[in-house]
Length: 286
Image (tube, rainbow, N blue to C red; front, top):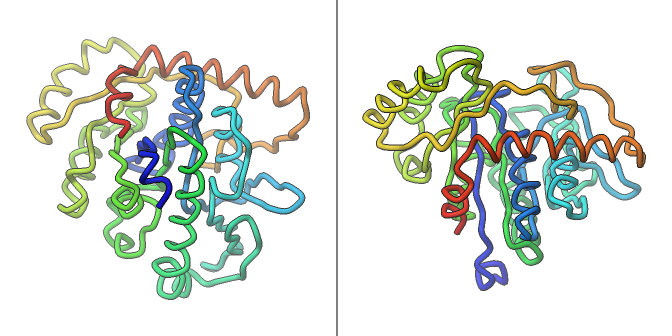
């Protein structure tokens, strides 16, 4: 494949739960590494959301469209090859490569689509992005430790393995139980995937970071892996992907709103850049 010859660099952000901060972290990293002069693209193989970005000839998750804006790259269907729009009663409208495919029940999707056509579509899209970008930041979905769904999960570890992407695991400390979430997630990830995880990021922290450091040392003893940074609780006006965080709002993609969006992306990128060891992150990209 062409992308292998080009040796595209990639990194996946996974979370200990939905709402841990994956989407915003990928958004920030796209802007940070674009500012460093790289050609960057986001990628999420499968996203479930009723908030989408609609072009004349395709539709993808709004979150990946915002990340593409952050990366200063064109918004394309390859950034979110599979979009699930929930209909209720375990049914969703399935969009593949930006086009409506069909309505499916969850059991039908998992058993007959995800590991076949779904995985193929995802990898084809990743390879296309890799042909035209130096760095791809991949976003996982939910948690990689959903043991009832791991077999059918084409958004977390399977994609990380197939794209040879190291993984950083982010957790929301505001909810409490962040250390237990990290250790528990690592314990429940299949052993063949544990080696893909390179470290952790603590998100939405309030207070004196010195208080956390004994916990970081204990975490290193338990997992053998470091904490790459602690992101403080930050207020921003980037629309949420779903209702787990703040109430999601519609986004009108006009020039005025895009200017405001870019300003908010710069704001969160500045916070993340000051909170993470970006050189350490850059070393992971391979």
